[in-house]
Image (cartoon, rainbow, N blue to C red; front, side):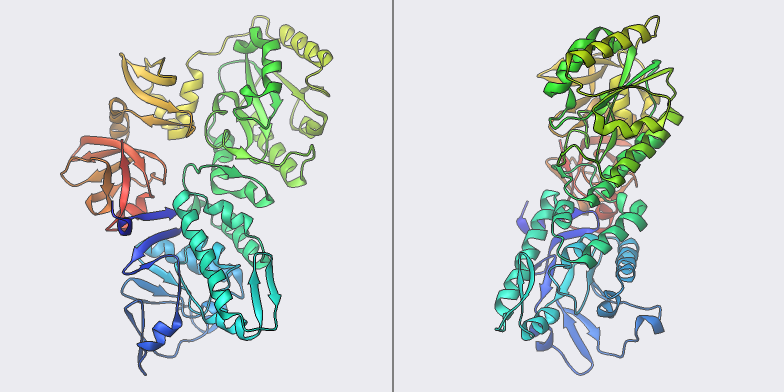
Amino acid sequence: MEKKDNVFTFGNALSLYYKDYETPLIINTDDINQFKRSDKFYVLGNEFNAEIKYPYFMSSLYCIESGDIVMVYNAVELIQRPRLIIKALMALRKKYGFSKLIYLPGIGDPYIIPVLVYAGADLFDDIYIKEESINNIKYTMMGKTKSSDNNINDNLKFANDIISLLRSAIKTGTLREFVEKFQYSSRAIEMLRIIDNDYFSDYSMVFPVYTPYIKANTIESLNRPDIVSYRNYIKNDYSKPDVENLLILPCSAKKPYSKSKSHKKILSRIEKYRKYIHELIVTSPVGLVPRELESMYPAAFYDIPVIGLWYEDEKKMINDLLKSYLLKNRYKNIVAYIDEDLNFIKSSGNIILIEGNILSEEKLSELESTLRDLTINSPKMDHLFNYKSMLSYQFGTWIKDYLDDIKISRSYNMDMVTRNGRALFVFNEKLGRFTINRNGACIFLNAGKKIVYIDDFKPTSYVFNAGIKDATDDIKPGDEVIIVHNNEIRGVGTALISYRAMIDLDHGAGVKVR
């Protein structure tokens, strides 16, 4: 695939080659002025009429369209009220999808550009940068400073370096980490919080189902769309196994938790009782992790600074989630085996609390004795529950109706879900997700889920967007999908972009075929 044919998305952000340019892009306004006439001007070859535009408060119109570009002509006014600029960007992405590039003229502050790209803006210009340079403002990695010189060249380089980093972050799936990390502007943080709080349902539809990692180093990480989607699943859709006893445990730095020294020591002491109990790990930012989901995304892929103290936001999130979980999932007995810093969860229900040094012989013996008494005559957990639960989390609870007569086998150090000796799904531990085998594709065809409809051809390494006719609206970047033509399964693979981007874009790859 030619480099210029590549298309990458991350949420609302888009990175592609447009003519001789790569987006996101800071436009050199000298190029615009070079082709400007009294009644017209040109942006990357797209003609705009030069006419009077009214302020936002005087007109609901705030953008004009020409060719492949939508220009938010009063962006400089809207940026003063972060909620308005985010509202405009989210509305434009929703209306045009990825079929248009969104241009914010007069916007070029490199400390705000990252969150604007995250919100869906593609094009900026150098007017703001030139103005600040004339006023002796210098851009640095620690923020803006006052200088005695005109720093135009240095400032333009700094801003374009940020743009290069943004392109890379979109391509590598690390844009969210970049935006959270690049916090030099309170206005940028405000805009990110507005996106998370006001537009979660819209943004979660295009946010990748997994990213390479989650560096939860800021309080904003609590509201990442993938993290919130996970917590919503645990709160609203997750169903516990058919056992009476719940054991609540603290998290560990090592993932999956069961491979950590602390969990290994605890589990070795209670091994004989584990088939009678359900284990639930308490953590931040994901909240609660049923043991069977510990190897999946996001539970196995986050990293967070641990100092033995919890922010009040974290405590509230965990307590609210635990209360909702226990209201929906009823247990006869609940045991919390935790360090003292987690004792705030005791308010979440009628819990037998064993707290203190959880690796001490005294506490381990107390836990062992407690579970011995509680598990007398208790029902055992279904040996297939873990895999059914994992599949339900990844694909949706609808898939439970298609999992009769499945078996689990292991080959080449990989767990496989099989039926009649044929592999339906294979668990990829590196991704924390199942891949769909060709034999399992009929499940999705019958259910009408995760389908990419193509023209009449045989997919090889990629399915390009030009050959995609339609796609079901449940497809996000990173999703497992099946490839179909006229109700015939042509292949399986991984979605590289969202269903909307597949439909809107006429170049670039939409699916990586397996």
